[in-house]
Image 1 (cartoon, one colour):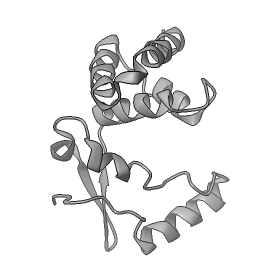
Image 2: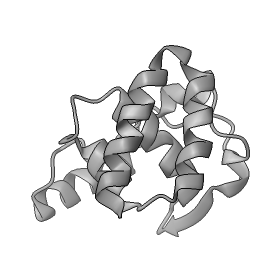
Image 3: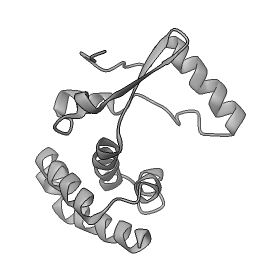
Image 4: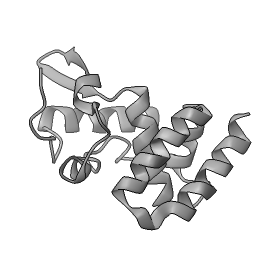
Amino acid sequence: MRLSEPADPLPRPLADAVAIVARDMNLPADWMNSRVAGQWALGVPEGFQARIRWEAFGGLDVGLSGRTDLIHLKLYAACDATGPHSRHFADLIALSPTPGELAEAAAWVADQDAGLASIVEEVIRHVRSRVG
């Protein structure tokens, strides 16, 4: 399956399932959302679409981003977040990115927004201090 454009808003069956999981797992209501869909128009990491892994859940096909793309997107989001206690920082740390993965992601973030260079460096320093 190929994705020609992102689903924004989330399709109703998926939004309903997200709400149930949020309730049952005591997660924020927006734990899964389509905010990243706006990035589709601005540019996603090279090869993103080819790396999407498709899973069928009943009649719903869901494209799942791979590790490389999550590192790129989470680094970008962490640069725009409220600080090192944001979920984007936590998610990035949980991915335990290697220095090479962080460097590749940083280059992509710089292509997206050159004004984030100093913030990217700060985020990477913080992540490296936590990833060991």
